[in-house]
Amino acid sequence: MFNSFGSLYRITSFGESHGEGIGVVIDGCPAGLKLDFPFIQAELDRRKPGQSRITTQRKENDDFQLFSGHLDGMTTGTPLGFWVPNTNARSGDYSHIKDMYRPSHADYTYDAKYGIRDFRGGGRSSARETIARVIGGAVAKLLLREISDIAIEGWVESVHELKMTGLPEVPFPKLETDFQQAVRCPDPEMAEQMYHLIDSMRKDGNSVGGVIRCRARNMPAGLGEPIYDKLEARLGSAMLSINATKGFEIGSGFGGTSMTGYEHNDLFVNENDQIKTTSNRSGGVQGGISNGADLDFRVAFKPTATIMKDQKSVDAKGNEVIVEGKGRHDPCVVPRAVPIVEGMCAMVLADFMLLQRTRRVR
Image (cartoon, rainbow, N blue to C red; front, side):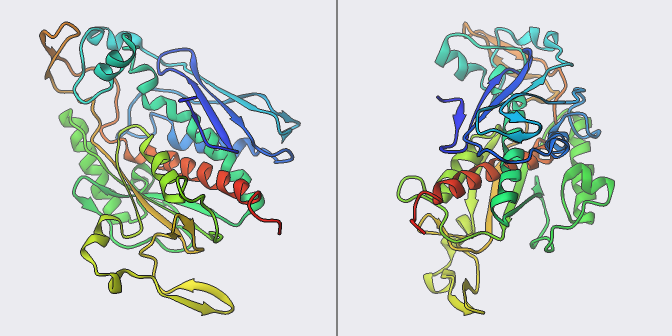
């Protein structure tokens, strides 16, 4: 049960970074949804490794296979079973840390919990597990297209101390330059600076973190389940379950603590017979329920734990050791995490859209 996420729209993932592959079962997707296979693959391509010199050079096509739950590309209402094989695993890259605990990794905590761990790239703790989330999110996006007007867009807002200001245009601008595409930042000047910073970290064998901002437009009012399954609570759970995340804030977030209530309140107005707010410091959620404004939140990612520098640590017996930096890793995970953040958001919203259908007679 702890490898599953969602209520009515629910995914269960399985597989390891250096095992046979990664799989996901999607349960609760309604029947009659046309599956857009090229779109699902395109979402996986946004996440896959080896996209540019500032990402891990592990070469994986991440081509998916669909084994169940559809007939001629149409969902049947039964579980959808997806599988993505690993084709470029190099487990030997990790043999030197078989009995060592890498700093800031899950090596020690998995050992403490289970008494055994998969040292090959971290096993289930590897970010390769997020393939399942991107597939689940891609199908959720297709479902949202069918039953709503919701559009989800994520972008890299900051890397280390470099930060773009303001929201992108509506609709979301295309990432036209190579730097924009590599970094996933819509500000061309800032994208170039971010690219060179990440590349300098790669050359130095170091890493940096950053922040992804995500927005869902055309939101209906009424999504969210009080009291213990509020919309922002489920979003926080979804985002903080992603590898390397260390923070989540919605709307004004922590910045709102420096404001007064008079400054922070979002005032309601009647605009063309529609109830709207004059500002969006709530991030589109009030009382745990969407108010119809754009859903607006940020997710913080720490610097990649694996770096190409030697570091002090201990082994399973408590002996002091030196962990050598080896393998293929991202100097910054943030650019490849954008479709993961979007996917988790899509699954949360698809789930709540289905739940909302059970809440009113009409």
